[in-house]
Image (cartoon, rainbow, N blue to C red; front, side, top):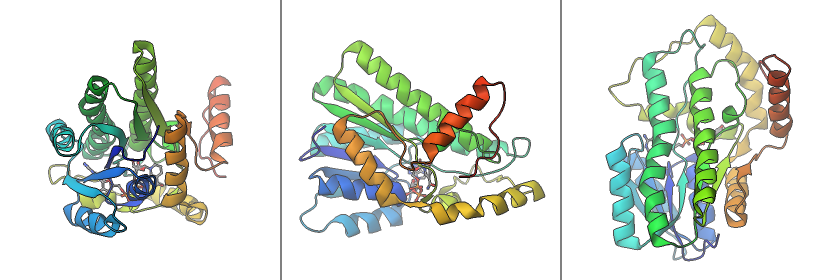
Length: 278
Ligand SMILES: NC(=O)c1ccc[n+]([C@@H]2O[C@H](COP(=O)([O-])OP(=O)(O)OC[C@H]3O[C@@H](n4cnc5c(N)ncnc54)[C@H](O)[C@@H]3O)[C@@H](O)[C@H]2O)c1
């Protein structure tokens, strides 16, 4: 996939991995539209990236809302031309034991992570097919889409769905003969503002799971992960390389490949992997 001169849309582009993806795409010569629900952060990101003659715009978008994503796709194609690359990256997280997570936590993560990806596929892929030009859909999944850490049931379920969407989209496009590539990225821990996802929580879904003693103890065990967190830029660099090379899956943190293998071996052996610590 040639990014030079291509119009690329990045959802969740105002922060973290999305912002780093936008920076990398601009460095490749793409014209970039940042789509994010957090308006002030979006304005700051556009201002930060609008240097060196970069062509970058912001469109406030809520990916959990089909009409908002459809309006984004329409506006970008009318103003800037055919979208060649979409980075469906926006996502949120919350934690809690399976028996403790609130319905509002489930709803919020499924709405943003799963339906947000579905809305991007439904609004951008038909336009890409109609344009008939090489194009690419890059979806930010997670290692949580391949293995199930305790304490993150709703997030794990949402990211397993995201990986299933990406794989099936790639298979559908291949079967139908369309020259549209698909990439799914599976980062592990990355230094971003994901832990502060609640800053964008909808006012209709305020019943957040309260951390129980079980979750507090689990968070203690997971604290060491901060030491091995990757930067958003490391993840974005590998991701943009995969888009250019039309590679389907990206596991940016090398030890995570053994973790995925251990998970499938456990399942095939009739067991559950449980807490995985590198
Ligand atoms: N940080 C990690 O450790 C990690 C690991 C694996 C996967 N991921 C995934 O990476 C993606 C990016 O997250 P991040 O870590 O950069 O976090 P982040 O919080 O820094 O960035 C996420 C962006 O998504 C935006 N967003 C949230 N809800 C939205 C909505 N409804 N519509 C549009 N935009 C919305 C936020 O405003 C924010 O700008 C997510 O899909 C996340 O699940 C992150």
